[in-house]
Image 1 (cartoon, rainbow, N blue to C red):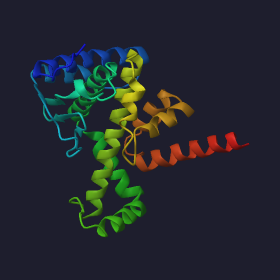
Image 2 (tube, helix red, strand yellow; image 1 turned 90 degrees about the vertical axis):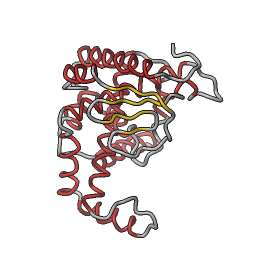
Image 3 (cartoon, rainbow, N blue to C red; image 1 turned 60 degrees about the vertical axis):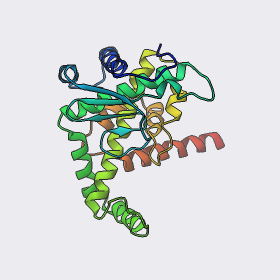
Image 4 (cartoon, rainbow, N blue to C red; image 1 turned 90 degrees about the horizontal axis):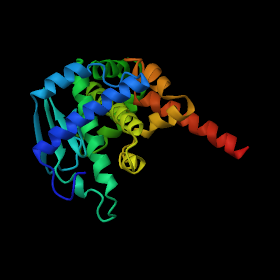
Length: 248
């Protein structure tokens, strides 16, 4: 148990390597390619740097989430205040699960980086090639704002959407790992990840209709043929069919 104290750098190191063990077990037992480069990732992180500090709850950067960040080549930071994240509800299982969820999330980002960030590159190119109409609509909206968040071209926007997609599938893989390991209050933690317009629950909606193998093989595995726009379409179609069945 973490206890009611701020995390230290040693806590972060322990959480990271415990999470590597969780990923390895889930990957073997479920026969799913959660982290294809895990052995290399473990070796690189063995000489990595680990930090615990208060984070500002933003997602700036390619490998940042609300409670943690991976900075290439081998640095992982977790929010030192995770042990208090359940306040004022006082649900002690939540900080423990969130700590492992966040560490697992950052290990998966590290694994993707060591694999060459191929998913990001392929997804960006797919968006530029197959979703130019959506990019045009997106740019129209952005150009009407005072703050364009540094987005000035279609490629800038495609990079942002590709980054969001990579993070979405990273969240999903972390969820699969902790679900397999039976961590308590995981759904409570998962609900905290649903604030974005393209929440990672898009993939669990698809998983419930198909299965996890489909998500890994036909979505994550189809590098350069799928993105958050496609995930939104597929999950929306599933919800519409479910609503029709319920209405009938």
